[in-house]
Length: 407
Image (cartoon, rainbow, N blue to C red; front, top):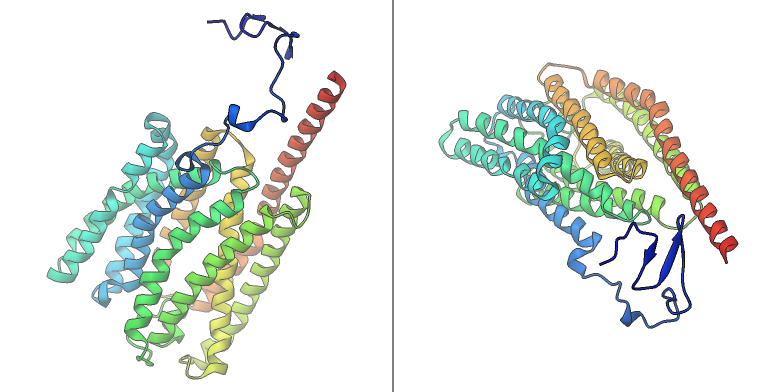
């Protein structure tokens, strides 16, 4: 066997000068005119990047997706809101810590084993909800929340790295949307379709926690419809965002990246300004919105749906950006873990804020302010992606020019 680093390969009788291979008359490189069957390059479907995304998507549906479905159903409404907020705040607090350790564990045992370990806590969380529903015990809910928080931090960090790092660059946006589709399917089935089927005749406000926009102003069946439709349109929005950056509606990836960012920024800004306007009106009139009164319902329902559309596009675009910042698997897991750590910390703070009586106009104003303050930083990230594309294009052009000169 020849040494791959040597200057001469006896089998092909080739010589290597620098990085160029000089072929002898008796041995020539494969040409595109030769039959493909003699040089197979097609890989089995189960080894393709699409199959890997489908696998991580199914795992996401069976873990965070089902978790979202259970939270959307509220275990038949048997849990108290204080218990829900406390358990979820505890869960996300532990997730924030273990997301930090995600790259370390992945480097130690690999992606697939980290993904498997990350799924172990979700059955305990479900068991805690079941025990609370049947026997009324709350301690197991907290145990399940802690166990789920510890494992889910690993799961969230590694699934994001797989979804962003595995796909080819020209398919990355749509494959990320595929992953989000599986994640959102739990909300569509549990928090939306099942809840809507159970509550479609209840056109009263109900006794619900009034710390959220839906619970404050919408009837029970309208909340179920909102949850269902928001999950559906949010999923479609991820596909819209992924298609805008992937499909060749413009030949320049740089133009597609900046144009998609501008669209998302305008949509988010307009939605939050609209939300403040609506909330300022509703805090004085305190309406009870039901789909039976379409005119009043449509205004309040519309702002919520547009918020979900904005969120879906933002999620896809963020992961598309970090997927394009580096081709290194190590960088991918670190970027994904950092993003998930910030995300879980924000959710934990959100549950803490909900535990304190706060006017919705204040929370809407805070969200609007955060949206506008994040725009310069997100635009800077977009520019980093554009610079990466410019660098790749320059390298490809240089390689093409070198190949032409060498002929």
